Structures are given as structure tokens and as C-alpha cells.
Length: 102
View 1 (tube, rainbow, N blue to C red):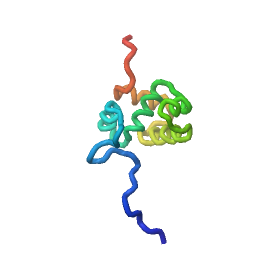
View 2 (cartoon, rainbow, N blue to C red):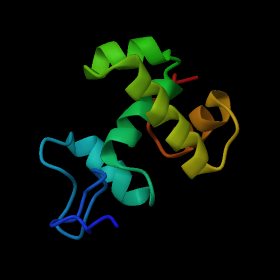
View 3 (cartoon, helix red, strand yellow):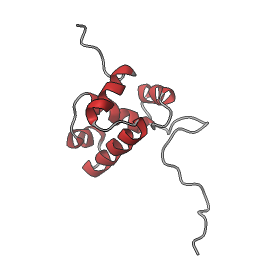
């Protein structure tokens, strides 16, 4: 039989005390308006909306490609969308992507 962990395991999601330390202020603010997405997922979503590949996301955020892929998969699931284009549309509506002024 497995014993319960001595301390709760955090998935990095914001808590009542706020987002994890070191979270960029913009990501923390958007995460607060996007229930279910962690500040890191909001960062990744912003990069997806800019058309970045998993490899480019990984390089920019100093994470592995696999981690970037997992973040994207979780974002798609949490937003209830089926692809990156739909996720980018959600990001645009949330103000994660600056307008082109046109």
C-alpha cells in the first residue's frame, strides 16, 4: 500500500496566496482571468498564438521540447479546443496577442 505524501504536491497552479514566485506579471494577471490555466500555460498560450512551434517555445522558455508539447496539450484540453489555431483565437480574444492595428 502506498503512503500519502507528507506534503501536498503542487502542479504550479495559482493558489489562494497567488501564482508561483517568478511568474511574469502579465501572465499572472491573465491566469487570474483564465480559470484553469497556470501562469506558465498562459505564457505558452501566448507563444502558440504568435505561431511558435514547440521547439521555439522550448528555447524561449528554457524548457525541453517535450515539456512544451505537454503544456500545449494541457492548454488545448483546458480550453476545450482541438488545435493550435483555435487556441490562438482564444488567446487573441483574451488579449494575449497585440493587434496589428488594421
